[in-house]
Image (cartoon, rainbow, N blue to C red; front, side, top):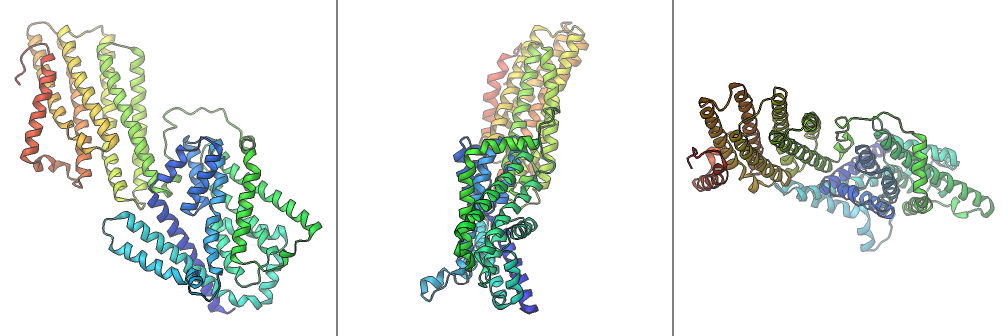
Length: 594
């Protein structure tokens, strides 16, 4: 084996690893967070968790990615540790699919059908289809994703083929044969397999490298067996690294993964080599092929799952004993976070951001409703709750803003990019709504401390404005939660109605002030409250317009009103008059002109 063979092997290995990375990323992107959402929701029964873990891993071609997601789920409180154990077991089964795909490199035969099954035959066809989809599918992201998957698979197989050809000369190399014989020592073979997998952080990739080497004919079952066992231990490094900086349960999930593979390996090795002392398995001395490696890999992972599945609760308890609970209790604000591990699955990370943004929107909606109720029925406890909600809304804005900035550098679909823009533009408005809710609550508290009260007429007018404000917040929340730009169109007429109502309530207050029915001091508080309600409607309008313009691919909100058609303007005016007719008659006098 000369220097050129070494260079070819390095190049083949590089292409192999890159192809696996490219295919995995494209598969995750195409899934768009759907597979992760399935993992999150459908893990109530342990057997379902195992099947889902196997299915998702088989699709995204990476048990490491699945276990990292699970660690993130547990860290975020989305999934319980018991559910995570089943998915981790299933992930070990799902990862064996890759070894079966790679075993196609060992196919030999002279018939056309057999030749077409060889990666060197069909990979160029897949690459050609992939490049056509990638270059000529303008704006069609799913086709581009499929193109990336095909190209990734072709690169992976080409790299595998290049590696296999570059090491073919090692079959008659005494040094290489001696090295492979040394690895037949179970402890040494396990150590090498674990170390290689820990370095490249992919058991699928390390199994692929072993399959390429076995094509030399110099790798026997006695050598491959302990290396495969070690590879299953080495793959745990990824989940352990991902648990650094996470909470206790996330660290425990990583330990469940380690214990599962470690116990399975120890039991398998002990039983197998003990039996070998009495039976002397002859096949250990024969050369292994890629299909044989796939068989061993599958049998071990399926067997370990069958063996340890009944003891999944004990694995969880073992992990809990290893990492005991501490007594520190986090505040609600501290627990609002989105795990950065999900940045490697942009589609699902975006779905988490959408969920957090909806939570924030619901929180601020609840805060403004509480503030409105407070205006009509004072409650000291409610004031504290509104102040706490404002702090939580601030935390939501910080977390979402920071996370979305990091996520923006990832490869997102067009739909996810729009979602990101809508959320980034809207969270500051939601945060300001919570600010106004708190300001209203503090103004009401100040009134009570000074023993001040609005007049009967003022209370009736405030009640009308509170109702209108609650209604516009409800429509805004629903349109934002559903990303419904058709519903968002109805927000702006509401905002204009609230502006008109606020103006007339202020005029009515001035009349009462002139008649001596109200004081200047209470007037200042009323002014603050009215301004707060009006500003809430303004922020609702901002959110709705952002939703409409971004959904329509028109990011210039300042030009929104200039571009609406006469027909749209007529609809707007009609809806404005209809809404005004609903709320205006409820005010304390007939001074409003419709």
